[in-house]
Figure 1 (cartoon, helix red, strand yellow):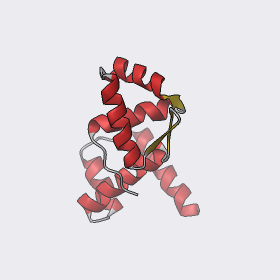
Figure 2 (tube, helix red, strand yellow; figure 1 turned 180 degrees about the vertical axis):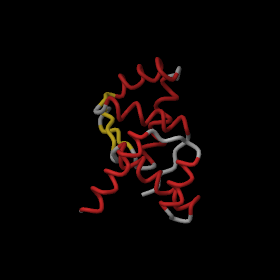
Figure 3 (cartoon, one colour; figure 1 turned 90 degrees about the vertical axis):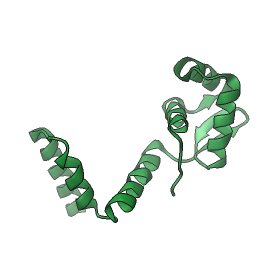
Length: 119
């Protein structure tokens, strides 16, 4: 699964994930407040994202077809594939080289790796 979204579409999807299930009228109100969108913009973006298979609008009730976690996991996997030739260690090395990890963060990463090794 690899669904490409614009930044605006991603922000919109985040709103749906945070409030789902959500009526389309309520979604219009939230988008007007948070994104300064008109009703027509909200419905246009909703239709485009539904076409991509991420969301669905059934009788005015908007829900996701793909969870936020699955969407962002897929997006992360694509970055590793496209930018680091599929090498997770190369990605992690590049990421931590630019960011000073705290002792707590390093320990948390070690625990996560150890947990996956045990499975």
